[in-house]
Image (cartoon, rainbow, N blue to C red; front, side, top):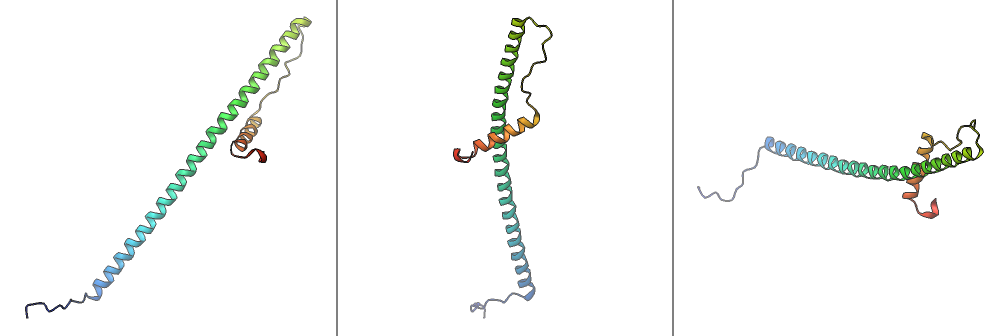
Length: 122
């Protein structure tokens, strides 16, 4: 009579179903968001490491190209000096090593291998 006596009202079957659906839905959403976050972090880290590799490789290939360019200029100067010494005006075209696109790609690849390998693997 009026005091409540400690009885708890049992929820209706519809309320139980609704609560179960809501908990399953919220659990599923949390799982999906967690998975997306993990994939995002992995992709971001992978992209950062690839960018770092590219810039390192590009720096190394630029150094190699500078070396080839210096060698080419030195050879050209030597040939000009020889022409002057010989006095021959009809000398052949300069015979310097021409760095092709393929050569630059190979050099960049070798430099990446050197940068990320131990000396015994090279």
